Length: 114
Image 1 (cartoon, rainbow, N blue to C red):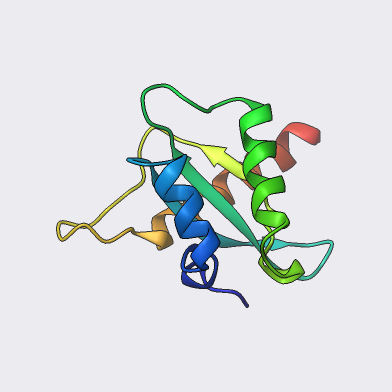
Image 2 (image 1 turned 135 degrees about the horizontal axis):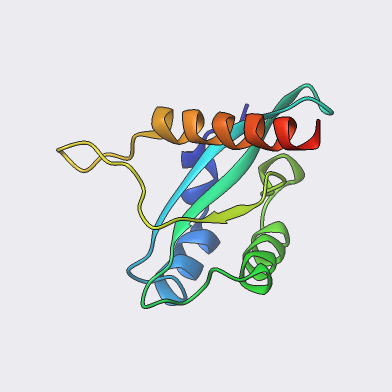
């Protein structure tokens, strides 16, 4: 399992987020993938000033990070743009709520395919 801290704390990721995503809130969580029978990293991004939210932007982030980190740290779960990331009163990101949201998304997709 790869923690989100492992991905976010890579020095080149910090440089990228400091220059391109400055002022952007990013959270990375593990999403269970049935095909791989393992968790894969997925990023949730709150874009600044309306930037982002397109497939090209998501692909750019995935490709950029993919060229900088090991295979197991690549964002194989994709990038999701959201309006806000849940935080506690002290400002910590509530990853457990993001996991619940991700499960609901996956269940919604599974029901839609039936």
